[in-house]
Length: 327
Ligand code: GDP
Image: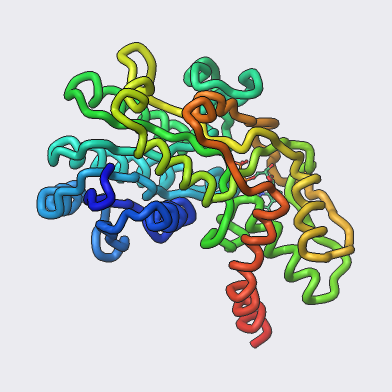
């Protein structure tokens, strides 16, 4: 990837996509293609293909997806499988037909079996049943990995799939119905703090373990992968193994510990109440990211620093919500 290579970031306004743009800009790239959802509906195959044919991107980061937390995944499984299959099928196929040099497909650690050994290695893909709360999303992402691999084998493309662990950072979704756990906790703790309440409700038992990666670190990993020379990049693309690579932080915390850290960072001294009527989801999904580390990437932002940075970015949005709710 050269400094003036034509780069399309699909989903550039999302949590991962916006971090990708910041990371690419920091590295000196400047020839970007962006389209909002209103400008280009990636669920529409013809529109997606016309865009690629007209704009001829050379490198594609496929960060456009329908994403959400445990409740959203569990409640709208049809939307998650349909939207994600449509978006990724259209983009991967248009990339092939219009000569894209490298494509990086973004997945998720939920693609791995629910009860697989920890830390999770790439080889554990499809070795057991999936977690029920996000199976439709996970299957769509598995199909995306398989599609990258199939195109590589049949057409000689060079597509790779990066599997991030639970990601967080500026620009996240703070809707409590659809968000992931970290933005939800930041919002709940901040609102309790502002209202002088003494308790915050945390879903589930607090026992599940999750690994959290700051979005800037994830984006740096993706750019690092795209910038690998042909020889190093080629080691990730094998005939005999799907082209996927884990991108994790390296250690995990319980949801209880996570909630306590959010309270500490935000200066909230009340107590946590666990609502066990809500699902825990998978008990643990710590990834083994040693392949990526061997290629020279490692995360820079620890969880507490990341939560502080995320909260600073979110505070104006949360304040606006509070003012709107008070009206
Ligand atoms: P998951 O990693 O796919 O399970 O997705 P989430 O980030 O939505 O949830 C992670 C864990 O945090 C689950 O065990 C949830 O039950 C728990 N959790 C605790 N409080 C909340 C909350 O307010 N919102 C969400 N989304 N999850 C919560």
